[in-house]
Length: 215
Image 1 (spheres, one colour):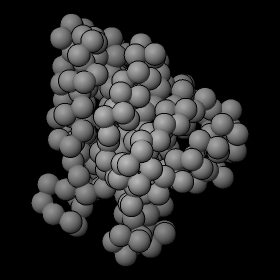
Image 2 (cartoon, helix red, strand yellow; image 1 turned 180 degrees about the vertical axis):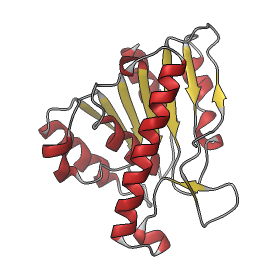
Image 3 (cartoon, helix red, strand yellow; image 1 turned 90 degrees about the horizontal axis):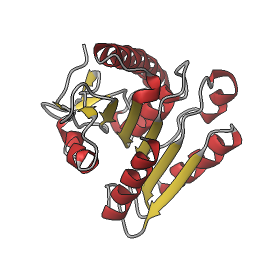
Image 4 (cartoon, helix red, strand yellow; image 1 turned 180 degrees about the horizontal axis):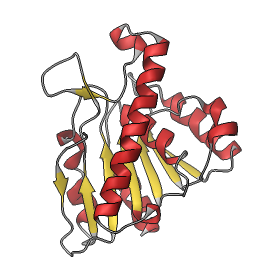
């Protein structure tokens, strides 16, 4: 069962659900700190930041959505199996959280960082109905060649990436935008200058601007 920290809307019942998806070896506490920035002028969104589905081998309280071969020595098969399992679990979690609030996909926004962005893109593009939008920091699009047969919906997306990222190369977001655009998905790209594997102020500003364009 997926659980994690959350921040309730100041005005209830909530009209939107924002799900933060953390990166490899982190946990839900890492991104819930972004909630106040989005909630500053939005009193109607519930924010949830679940822990990923697998414990990470890199420390107590650390989680991962799926193994990463070049980091933990896992195989490509293990990574793929983990991704499939994580996608199923996240889909079920989203369905439960939306139903608990009497909301639908059009009220859902996914915000990911690094591996969380990979999960956000993989999941959103395979939902039967388009969600409100995806904000992806410092990630990549997994298996872009699968979009031709697996793409089910086309939510608006913004990808934000540090130009000096030494963990996930900035070219991954550049390539993702190209693949998504070619598949007919509206995808904006913002590159943060002099930024490594993190969220810079200009990137956060871009994310919030995109967010308020959705609601």
